Amino acid sequence: MKLLSKNIVWAIGALLVATLLFSAVFETSNSPTPLTIDGLAKKIIAGEVQKIVVRGNELLVDLKDGGKGLARKENEAGFTETLKNYGVSGEALQGVAFEIKDESGFRFWLGVLVPTILPLIVIIAVFWFVFRQAKAGSSQAFNFGRSNLRLFGSFKEKISFKDVAGLHEAKQELEEVVDFLKHPKKFSDMGARIPRGVLLMGSPGTGKTLLARAVAGESGVPFFHISASEFVEMFVGVGAARTRDAFATAKKAAPAILFVDEIDAVGRERGTGLGGGHDEREQTLNQILVEMDGFDRETQVIVLAATNRPDVLDPALLRPGRFDRRVFLDLPDIKDRKDILAIHAKNKPMAEDVNLERIAVRTPGFSGADLANIVNEAAIFAARHDRKKILQADLYESIEKVLLGPERRNRVIVEQEKKITAFHEAGHALVASSLKDADPVHKVSIIARGRAGGYTLKLPIEENRLKTKSQFLADLAVMLGGYVAEQEVFNELTTGASSDLKQASELSRRLVTHYGMSELGPIVFGTGEDAVFLGRELGSHRNYSEEMAAKIDQAVSAFIQAAQQNAKKIISSRRKILDAIAKTLLEKETLEQDEFKTLVDSFKVKPVAFQM
Image (cartoon, rainbow, N blue to C red; front, side, top):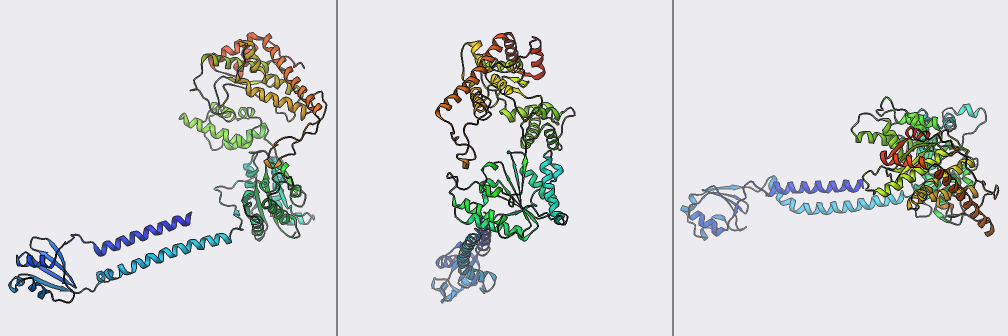
């Protein structure tokens, strides 16, 4: 693209130069009037001609009235003889001044050479352009097997491990790799060998690429980076050639680090039958396996790779000797979230009363990328309202925008639909506040966001890695709270509960088939071994009979019915609280945690346990 743009500029410049040359040669300030010899003779006889300049065969005529004329004479004949033939007498010629000029000079040679040489120059330029394009195409063909390997250093600012919040264990693993490259003798004296590969594994947004950039900033050795998808082409063998070129480039700069992002693009398990027959992808993977741990073991290149799907990688790629270290990146806990928020808020004008710990409490399950997005959305929200500092309310607003989407206050809602939404969300909130094992309610709103007509935000008090059966059952009852409230108040059902029913059905089936929390016992039903090439389960392999399938359906239905009965019991016995919550929502549209807690506590009702 750059080459084409450059050629276009050269072509336009050549045309401009040619235009200027033609203008200099052929244009004059006052264009003379063309005259015939007969017309010139008549003007001489009439005494209208003052001067005639003879330049070769051209006759430049200056008239007494200030005009100019241009005539041409024959090549062989004399000029005066020609005029006499047209009846011009000698006395008439004596009243005219004659001047003879040679045709030599710059203008003469331009007039002769330009019309002759310019077409030849244009033809040569066209051929040069065509051959240059052909040469560029042939060079690209020869470079087809070259990898698009980039050396770190193009980023605007380098980062270090201090700029990465949380991930303490992961940073420790990578700090040892960096130390190995900086001080190899310390490890070689102990008989330790340099790791062949380090695999960064974690959910999207947990900081795999960020850690790789920190390694690049800390290592002090050449750091090459490439995406695994750049190896794969439609032509068989190109990926393997690019792999060889990438490793050869890194070996020349050894000790060095080669970072391969999203390695699952070429490292998926072979022989799966579905998606495993792609010869180009498999040849590329085979070449990576050989380069990492083949016969050539004398290398000081560490391969740093990242993936969010380690379950689909080929076992040969994961064995020791290739990826000796596997670094797991978890989602940040509340302390790490606070530190991540502080890093992203460092260069932004925050109000003095902003409490990042409250934001960290409201964002369980958020990744580092999600938290960065929250701070950025808060800055955009503050700028939109022409504020000079980011307020706590801006951060709260950004959390809900990231979770559910932007507010839709201009959406036209009929009064009946608004009332149904208010009771629906009041049902969720009431059941959540009435069950012992349910998470506390942080906010209830009937303002539409994204596809949701309203929402109830509930978050755990403490962050738990494990979840109990009682907590799952409480969640089921809360999911069905809106459905039951609509049925109880309006004696009618709407489509507003469709998303709740879908989530409740999925959770109930997981309780039975994945978590072993049903009466069927500690058994996992079904596996997700099919269609791993898609990156997700296309369907689960059934390792149970039809009779067991019927029992699974019954167990799933039992969980749903129990959750519905508990929600119905709470809403029926606490109808006054439901009406009060719905009435307040219709008036204010939004209830924050403190307002909601004050409203519910005014009825002095104690939480109850879920009854199966």
